[in-house]
Length: 161
Image (tube, rainbow, N blue to C red; front, side):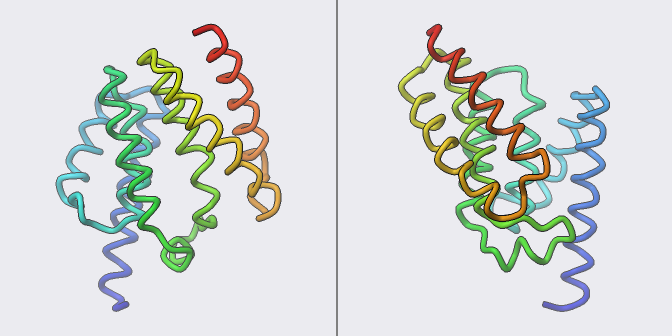
C-alpha cells in the first residue's frame, strides 16, 4: 500500500471518529449528516473497515428501526469482507472476530424492535456464540463484559415478546 493510500484511510477513519464523537455527545442529527456524506464518498464498495465502522455507528443515528436494521446489515456485510490484516492496519486494531458479537447483538435488538422474535433469537444466539472469543483474544477490557451483559438484557426482553 502506498503512503498516499494509508494517509487517505487515516483521514476517513478520523472523520468517522469525529462523527462518532458527535453521536456520543448527543448530536445524532449532525452525526447522521456526516456519516451520510462519508458513506457517499466511501461508497458501497469502499474499504470494508471504513464501511463496517461507519454503518455500525450510522445505525445508532436512525429514528426508524427498519433503517437501523438496514445499516446494521450493511455493517455485518462489510465485516464479512474484512481480513485480520486489514483490521491490523488501523491503530485501534481488534481481531475481525471481535466485531461479530456487537454486530449480531445490534441485529438482534433491531429485530426485537421490529417484533420479529425468531430473527432476533438467531442473532442473539450468534452474538452469544461469537462473544466467547472476546476473553481469548485480549479484547476483554470491559468490552467483552459489556457485550455479555447486553446479551443477557436482550435475552430477558426477548422473553417478553
